[in-house]
Image: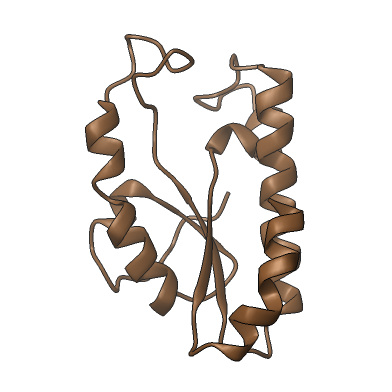
Length: 133
């Protein structure tokens, strides 16, 4: 992710204003993991969680580095999805998690930079991202 983004940045800077979006998870939130009352307190999948934490940090640093450019940098958390990792108790089907993707991309072009939005927030295209993880 980092290497690909760095390779494409020169092209993005030459293009019309664009957006970079990453797909993250609240499982990358150190704040939520540190709170024993949080809904993810018991989800300690170290490799996955650490990779999402690193991705969130990269997104924040990239947004800071590009703050004086027209490029918007945001991330999206799709929610708990029925996958091999998410399990059968997850409330969202894979098809439902894919649907907001176009909305995320549209929101990423208009939202304030350095935000993480949930799929529910992305459902209102052009809305303001309010939730930060």
